[in-house]
Amino acid sequence: MRIVGLTGGIGSGKSTVSNLFKAHGIPVVDADIVARDVLKKGTGGWRKVVAAFGNQVLLPSGEVDRPKLGQIVFNDPDKRQLLNRLLAPYISTGILVEVLKLWMKGCKTIVLDVPLLFGANMDKWTKPIIVVWVDPQTQLKRLMSRDGTTTEGANSRIIAQMPLDLKKTKADLVIDNSGSLDDLNERFREALADVRKPLTWTEFGLCR
Ligand code: ATP
Image 1 (tube, rainbow, N blue to C red):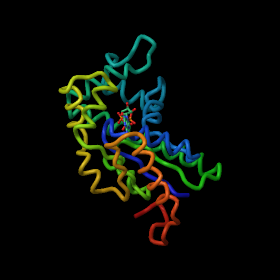
Image 2: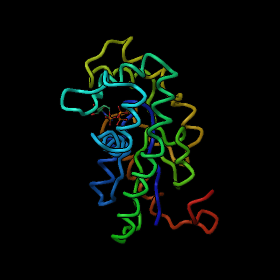
Image 3: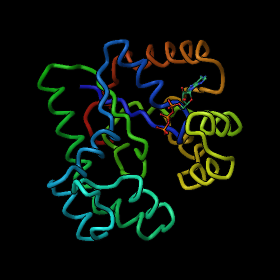
């Protein structure tokens, strides 16, 4: 099975590209959905987070108050690292389970949509790695318009991530999403043709 890695920067258009893959019948494993599931009340991830951050991150229902947890870790790099460290094993396992389910269904090509593909070392599992890139001004504009945030708010979220230009250097394929949606459709079609090319012998296997 071919596992395509899809990543990019905040608001660069990963979800938009992921929807194009789905529209072409290629299943997508969405790391954000897995990350939500591993925080559900009573799960191992939930227990770790409550033990580390206390009841202050819980809603009256006992579910994790995700915006509150997000705010706590956003303002404190040590706590952010701690949260990532606690949840990373649950997220990787959750993704692997989803991949296995698709493999058992006989899927030949799937996409892993993982915002932190490089940070989580999941780039080793995927080939090709697609980075959805966008120029900085467009990224800022789209983020502000989608989330209704100020320039400072959007900028601080962009700066908190690995620079998009660095991710670009690690890509096998770059989809430039700085233009219109029609342009994106065209870039996507080109990328899809590359994804569908047979793997060479050296590209086989999960390890690179
Ligand atoms: P996040 O990292 O926050 O999940 P993302 O990388 O998944 O973001 P999207 O949500 O796909 O990014 O796109 C960000 C915003 O930009 C959305 O509102 C989307 O509709 C819009 N958008 C994406 N591509 C284009 C485009 N080519 N032209 C205009 N708007 C676009």
